[in-house]
Image 1 (cartoon, helix red, strand yellow):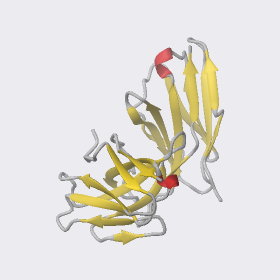
Image 2 (tube, rainbow over the protein chains, first blue to last red):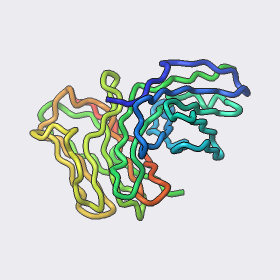
Image 3 (cartoon, rainbow over the protein chains, first blue to last red):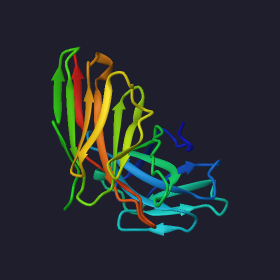
Length: 113
Length: 115
């Protein structure tokens, strides 16, 4: 079973920031928070991941609460092409870990013109 | 731009036939995953390999599914015999397990329809 809880759907106006929440209250100390998205009819695409510090890359920012029980993915200026299902996944990192991804139902983000 | 490739992209077959799906992981990646996606079950992990050795295939129906990596550039997923309930999109993903990274790169998928 997925270890995360996400709202099933969200709307966002084009050009505005999209803030996607995720609850992972049972996360353990060595588990990371990963975000992937799946645009219709395509394979999932990696967005960002983090352990406890906030992270930013060219696609998005990830804000993780201090107790690590929840996080928020931020798309700073959403475009129509960002319409997709966004998955928040908790998993171990690489090295001796498995990198298994257990996908939940995700959040369908609909960016409106 | 390195990508995971999958063939065929679409496959329609009759119940009872053998189906083989192929995946070419990104060169240099040492972990290959097979996932299946349906409307009812969402994305499910079927099996994965590390350095060509199977690590976990507990998600696969053992009696009809088999996954192999004949070499580092090819992974295969076979269904024999196929059944209508196998209709789904099958995704292959590859990754490189190394410190501070670990994301997976997904292929475009094989859409399988079993009639």
